Image 1 (tube, protein in one colour):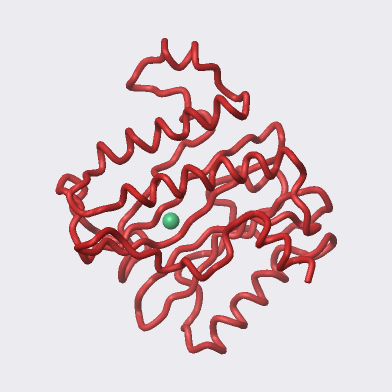
Image 2: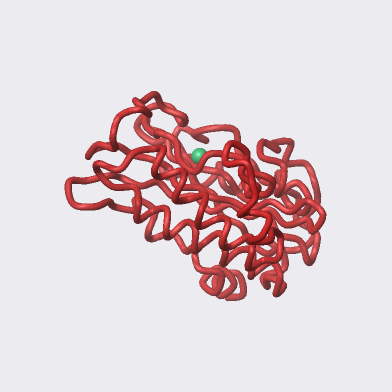
Length: 225
Ligand SMILES: [Mn+2]
């Protein structure tokens, strides 16, 4: 990962590592999206050269023993986030951590989405993308945060990537959900989504991807080794 690398070259490295570790391949079409395309939710042409100063969003994961996994990370192409990129990254990471805590037995999708939406509103105000005075006046059916975060926070995961499940029932132990908040600002060419897979248990939850670096500093450190 460095300026000048092509998105498909990164794709090639990833499939190589997956297969040599006995995966049968990608769990879904990989999204390797640098620059402005980090804001395109299902970009998958993976056909651009990566530029210094841009972020790159990697929504890529392996299938293993017929089960899917689903992961997203965002890296600075040149190994160092700009101040603004890091601020957006940390905002998404705070929402991720808050959301992850709420993926517990007995909670339900409506309460969960509403609470995540509130966390997102606070972060978007801090990033000066929304004003609290406007949020107070918003139509609850069309919350303003959806301009920057226009997808769901979680879906079921299993044999399929968007697996089937009962969204109207309270969360149950044994379920795996993704947790994937994001903030997308096309005019700044910054799209950040952070995604791990979370297993709900009888006592809280387990982040199945907690060993994969997620803090901005950890990512920069790894890239500059
Ligand atoms: Mn996902």
